[in-house]
Length: 127
Image (cartoon, rainbow, N blue to C red; front, side, top):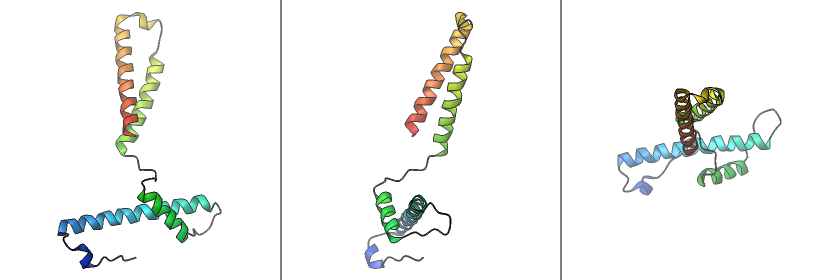
C-alpha cells in the first residue's frame, strides 16, 4: 500500500521533519495493523483465513489514537520483573530463624531484603 501526502500540505516542513513524519506514520500504521489483527483474532475464534473488516480497522484506529492499546514492555522492564521475582524467592529460601540469631547472617538477610524491595519497586515503576 502506498500512502501519499501532497507537498502543499507539508509546506514549512524541512527535510528532517519530513523524515520524522514518515517514521511516525509508518509506526502508526504498524500499530494499527497489529491492533486490527488482534481484534479480528478475538472476534473470530474459528480457524481459517483472517477476515479483518472495516469496522475492526475503525475500532483499532480509535484504540491506537487514544493510547488504549497495550504498550510493549521493554527488555529492561522484563528483566526487572524477573529479578524481583528471583530475589523474592531467594529471600524466602534464605529465611532461617536460627541463623538470624547470628549478627553476620542477620546483616546479610537485611541487605538481601533491602535489595529485593528495591528491585520490586523498580519493576513496578517501570510498568
